[in-house]
Image (cartoon, rainbow, N blue to C red; front, top):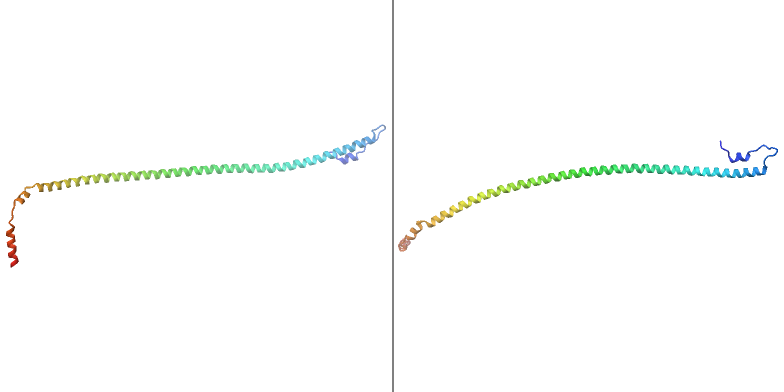
Length: 171
């Protein structure tokens, strides 16, 4: 057990024949007591300061651990968000590709349908043209026929019709 200032103060030495000067020893002991008390106070202050610093260190260590855990959680959340965003982007791309394929297929189908309709219209146009040409040729043949000439040569006496008409009116 360490000495206390009181132990030093109460210490008595045995007196010898030619011993030390008692005043010098007492003065030295008084100085020793003061220095020892000061060292004990400093030690106590330093122990209090160390305890306070250890407490703060513990607090900051706790904060550091919490922050590290928060950083890890934030990184995990960021990775999860990133992963989800990538999955969603892939889904959107797949959906867009499906829509694009569907639109292209519909356009190709419409183009084929229109091409078939154009071919059908060409056929109908050809048939119509052929029939129209035959009709015109038939009409031209009628115009060029000898019947017109015969018709022009045919003469009718109009006076004969007038007489018959008058007789019919009188009756």
